[in-house]
Length: 184
Image (cartoon, rainbow, N blue to C red; front, side, top):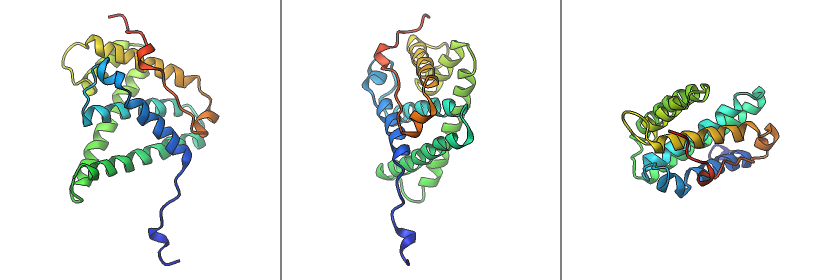
């Protein structure tokens, strides 16, 4: 067929469900009202990235075929970011430059969060979140410590999920209001 190249690609409902759960969680008002995440485009980007990294952190302990879920969700994230840039009025010629900037931000945060999640030092995680999400300089605030407590709880919850749940598109995170603040 001549126009098959321009036909819409099949959408994988599993990737859609996983990414949809991440975006829905990242948009919860608690993060912006209680945790102090800036309610800006950047703040929302950072919350999506945090939840993506939590999923990817969990999937790294799965067999190779299950890790493909992470790649599918990441690809969907990239398409979503591209679409959002265009919706915000970024010109076609500037989109690749902006996508590179977003990719650098993603990978920088991924490295910092992976290192912090691999450590038992909550101060390291709080410092990474304070710098990247809350844009704080200096010692992590009580809001950064609370976001670190939430992040640890989300990682623990994901650790208890079996791979088949992810393959079905089932993904849930803790209620941010139910996570008690960490001791300072």
